[in-house]
Image (cartoon, rainbow, N blue to C red; front, side, top):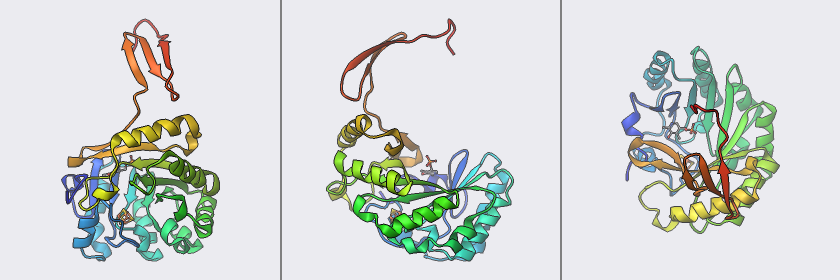
Length: 282
Ligand SMILES: *Cc1c(COP(=O)(O)O)cnc(C)c1O
Ligand code: SF4
């Protein structure tokens, strides 16, 4: 598909996607430091001008000002960190001046692919009144290096929250050991919490990278029993047509009869569980 997760359907004005009530995607650049074969936005990125004037974002800011249910602005792209610090500072202060906003999130691969981009000057440009979250994107432990660790330390000293998303890719990371190493290294060495493991979107040209959902579920089942919860991301699928992300979970609920449940443990043991609840359950 050319728009695998249906961004276009939820775009009320240019450079903005509003699919969930409390958060919006703001796309301040179509440029990216690298070009991932599996990128769900690659056709959009390839067909749009890489740079545009800041004033093109003004309708998006007007929209956000009018919609008081929005609490979080997510800068994505492309890669927002390809913009100069000054522009990022301007974005941050514009967002900060909207009273109902509480958090600024930045989806970026720069700490992984070009970690020297993370500088004290960048941190200053993004620091202010809002909670800042960085969501990095690493798929294999070999992508992490000493510079990534230094970058992560700089961001953590600034009290930014660090999360990571990973794409499940055949032949790259589609086994429990590879992912366990990546997730533990991200959290224990870099302080970056694994957030999402994405099932591949239906992007054109990546059949050779696709795994089955069964494969992803088996991996998650293995990891659940093995890794600390702080290292464990949620396995998700972004539904085509703009219907949003859903968690893909191994079937831990085996059976139920009223309030008598049978659950399956991470090691495959069936456990009965009788709920204890007040007489009029909510
Ligand atoms: C993924 C996504 C988000 C962010 O979702 P979280 O679950 O908060 O990470 C927001 N808007 C759109 C359109 C998305 O695709
Ligand atoms: S880093 Fe993200 S936006 Fe850039 S090409 Fe890769 S998946 Fe797409």
